[in-house]
Amino acid sequence: MTTTRTFYLIACAAPPARRLDVPIRAAQKVGWDVCVILTPSAYRWASEDADGEVEALQSLTGRPVRWQYKLPSQADVLPPPDAILAAPLTSNSLNKWAQGISDTLALGLLTEAIGLGLPITALPHWNDAQHRHPAVTRSVTTLREAGVTVLLGDTGFTPHPPRKGNLDTYPWQAAINALP
Image (cartoon, rainbow, N blue to C red; front, side, top):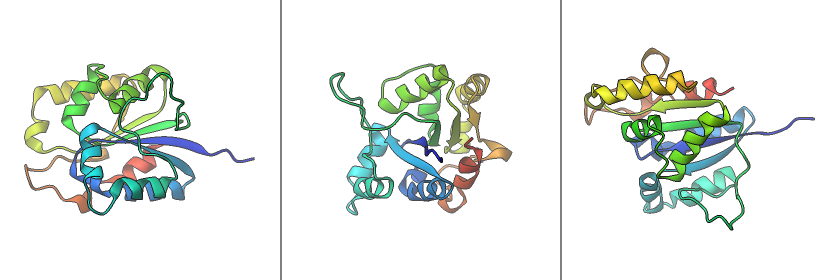
């Protein structure tokens, strides 16, 4: 008997979030059930998209796209995850996550996942000016020490000059390959 494994794709508001269909299709191809959780800013980008991006993600995954906490009286609409992929991960969300800040559903799930011992992969997206801020290095180190696989540098994403990112080179497949 084969059981379906579920992973949460937690996306922040960075340009690769406009192409979430790429990792979703790649993960589904290798047997994952994918649930999408967006930061509030990423949800705003997707919900204001004239092409119906939120609806397209829901159609592709067969699941609602979550972006805010539910009320305590509401049932969970997503199955529990077996793994989590935070991608694209912004420097803002990285630094909040490393400090244990849970002011959004996305960050709450990420901070809790560390305590639950879930396999977590993070694929950043920021420019090299943001990368040089000392908080970024500290936060990457904190998360790696907590067991998070941060795909940065040779193992994943390489920061680019400001306003010079190339969406075609964002290493989605490296993140899918890093899932357990």
